[in-house]
Length: 516
Image 1 (cartoon, rainbow, N blue to C red):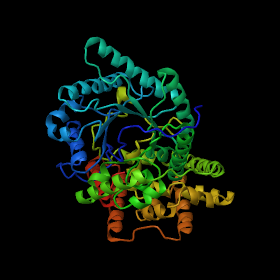
Image 2: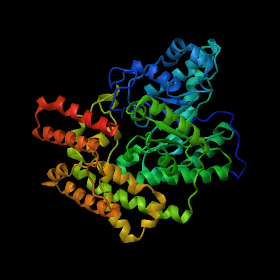
Image 3: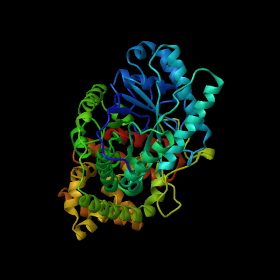
Image 4: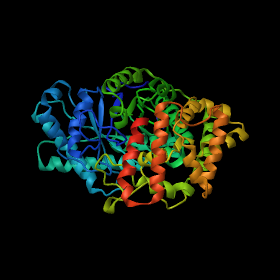
């Protein structure tokens, strides 16, 4: 491994806020006449995220969705004056999330690479900063070999382009690996250490920096609220130690949604969020953050993030505490994974009615892939649909199996460690608990053992928090009424009610200010 050395200066701006195309908005974007955003509208969304909302970076998603391959040409042509002043690749950043060739078909990756290369041609011709694109996000990373191979494949494509034309794009790109399971997040430092060494051997140079991407939604989807939250905290701590040991700057990104289950970053929760995830350098501001709150509120919240995120420090956890927190994660994950298969048929049934707000091609035909429950062949919905499905029947996923985990933690004497790893847990449970519909849960539990366990969860969580769950404000009661309607319409299994269910789902989502 590398010797300890002074942290290097990298000579570039690290963005604090990354707008993404995650379709978790329940309301219409302030600039659109529909909740749905087509792929051709995403250039306008990108520009508005930079110019109007103040985001530093925009994730352009090639993973499992339709894409406009002329994105850079369109942006430069339509908004030339803006990008003349705010240079892409220097002041503002557009970053592709590319397909993982070990999961999705590979030809889409080559198309993304050619976009990066030809974007450089456009920038040079227009006398703009080059290269405008030089980083890509690689999803579902399992090992260091995947990171390096993706980098090498880009180099091959770039070399081919140079053979065909005197103009060349950037000969190398920086890789941003996403770690999407709680146990892989916990071990991601080792993956990065291996990658640093492999990179140095391959390119005969030390990696200038790394921006590891901490997924927050998929770990919750696979393992529950507590493991996802604590694993992110452990990863941030481990990245701080890795940076100190190697001198290679580590700038973590965290991918979070607006509801607690998916990370809890929204304009009302910035202070608590920053305390929980201190040390991240970039946060995603997804569609719900941008469009389910008034525009001025979103702008001021993004400005606050841009000011505060760069000042946070990585909290390095004691090694013994880290080991104990890993045990905590394992206990909660085991309880979650035991109960989830028993209720999944109902969640899959509801998820069919969750409205789609982007042109995704995931889970169909040639492009089919999805997240699976460990130890089974069952495929889960994507995290937004999963979260929306639970909320739409009045059982917030934050409450699901959490009580079972807490019982076990209490028996083993890990409550203090849990408090250190996840200080706002009580607050998150209370916030989610306002959207619990006990009548719906009673109906669900009548004949199904999985939901009976959830009833036990709720009873224990109410003791743990000292609060009775259920609606407290007018908005909470309105939400309860909508999800009661959803449940009754869903149980009738009448296809004539499909539009009614979708309408009620959307109305409830607008109240909680996020689809899922």
